[in-house]
Length: 271
Ligand code: ARG
Image 1 (cartoon, rainbow, N blue to C red):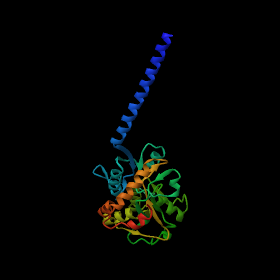
Image 2: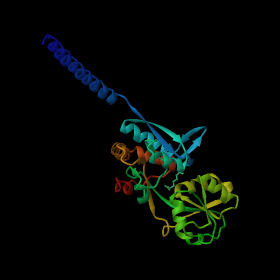
Image 3: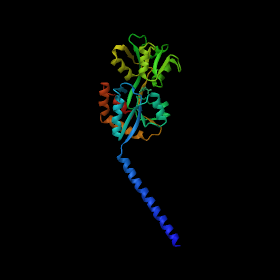
Image 4: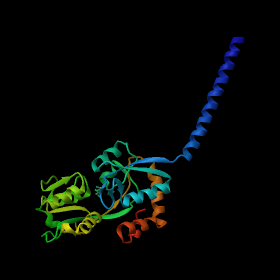
């Protein structure tokens, strides 16, 4: 009987000890969580100036400044890594990265596999051609060789005109390689985001390239931050995107990079 009592006492005491231990770990754990700032792994394709590109070994661009502002507001640190365009999608699908920023257009196809933040940038595709080209609109691309970055909406809109899998659509790993092909004469045009081709034409006057808009064939697109499906980060980032737009930081950064005012009204209808 005595032995049995001792046994019970030991059991009760150890149970109490385990429970109290659990209690302590739990409190200190949650305290730790609220104080500690989490660093997110962000993936990008840093070959898309002025959104993200390499400058003296550093990734810079509007997207970088914008994300830093938004992440700070949301209470996160970010570590932006250049992995390339196709790998970016692979990483987010496999959940080896927390988010992607890369002038990524929000569309239904991508929404099936990924989650997006609310829109932060208004964009549209545009044509880049050599000065004096006979190409005046997207319809003129029909029988021409066109260079695009593989897996972009630029490829999509060009394939709509030339046909899916048309051999005349030359696809490149990044947009700079597509532009190089145009300069080398291997393609008659490049189709990519308006801000990117406009900046290229302006900053490289010796290349003698001009841009052509086509609102009939190319519709408005919005960029979003891209998350793995089901990511809990979306809620936090949506909130801080709205804040950064409302408190003027967005306009400040936009003007710094693009020298014009953003269309905040259109963007706000998307929040
Ligand atoms: N906005 C286009 C898309 O989402 C092109 C983006 C390309 N971005 C880049 N960093 N290369 O398809």
